[in-house]
Length: 91
Image 1 (cartoon, rainbow, N blue to C red):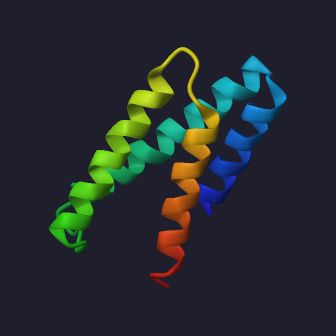
Image 2: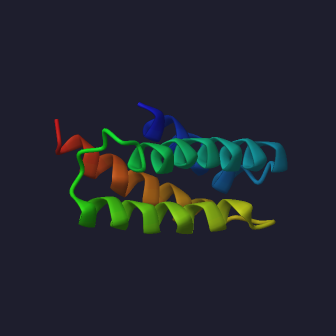
Image 3: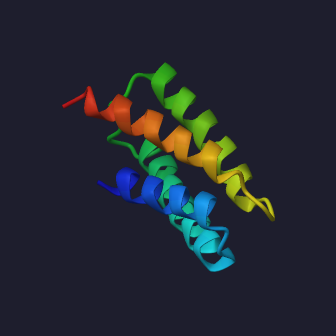
């Protein structure tokens, strides 16, 4: 699952201090959330409006964080883990 891979990259970036890893983790996070935000606006999206709005607000916060010069990798990992856990209950 993409969320799991992104969380791993974010945890490694937080613990390693390697700027290259950090940029890769931020880029992977950005791409993942761009896809999530696009899916939320797709005509076939059947999620309830309140859930869509909540995920969009969360996605916007994630996008702001990854755009910072020094993103908080722990915060980003936590957000992605929480979304991943929520998605796991849907299956």
